[in-house]
Length: 157
Image (tube, rainbow, N blue to C red; front, side, top):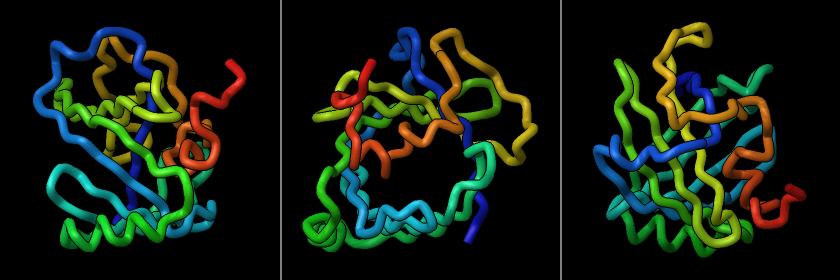
C-alpha cells in the first residue's frame, strides 16, 4: 500500500496542444463510502481494482492499493458496481518534472474537465501551466466517487 499525494484543479484553457497520449476510462465503485472506496476500472484494454482509504485533512493524501486484473474480469465486475459509472478520456501532459492527468468527462459529467498532479510530498513545488484553473483538491464534489452519486450536470452552477 502506498500513500498517494495529489492536487486537483479545474481546467480553464486549451490544454490539447500539450497532450502526449490519451486513453478511454470507464470506472465504477463496488464500495464508495468515504472511509474506503473500492473501484473497478477499465483503462484502454486493461482492467484494475483499486482500494483507497480515507482522504486526509486538506484532501491531498490518502492510502491507495491497486492491482491489474484481466479486462474481461473488470468488465464483469463493473456490472456489480453501484449505479453511476464514470466515463472519461484521460489526457497525459508533461509539465516540468511532473505529469498532469487531465480527465475530460462524458455522460452526466459532461462539461467537466479536471487536472490532477501527483506529488512526492504535500509541500512540493510544481509548474502551473496557463490552462490550469482553480484548485479543487479539498472539494469532495470533484472526487470521482462523488461524481458517480451526484453528477456535474445536476449541480447548481
